[in-house]
Image (cartoon, rainbow, N blue to C red; front, side, top):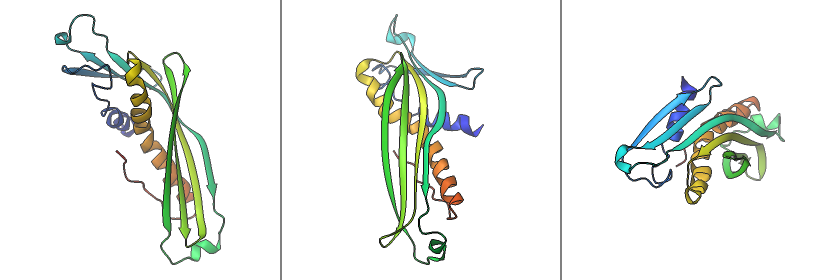
Length: 178
């Protein structure tokens, strides 16, 4: 289904160097458990040597942590003929919540202005719980700071487009970010 494709696409960018520093060939296996959690395991082939431990990256849950919408100039702002200037702000944070379990929050703020007048402001904090095992400590921060937000981005993009539409404006579709 579409959500599964988003999981695969986002996680497909997890490089071998970020998951244990293995430069040998990597075999990837994806499983979905009964709760719908998506698990990606990366194991070194036999060429990497006996005892090489694979890393596991599991998406446990994706959810909206916070959503805020301001529409201060309505209904007069709907009559504006000028094209608004859209400002985009992006923040991420990650923290360990249990052993091997991390919460990552991707917060995106959209502000639409015509001149100094704000048409709307919408902010969404899209969060996810991720189980990450077998990743050396020196590679853990890039996984949390890059790969987890990559998984969350399609969800926050959809949340923002929906909120802007519900505010009475045409949806804003953010371009993918690398």
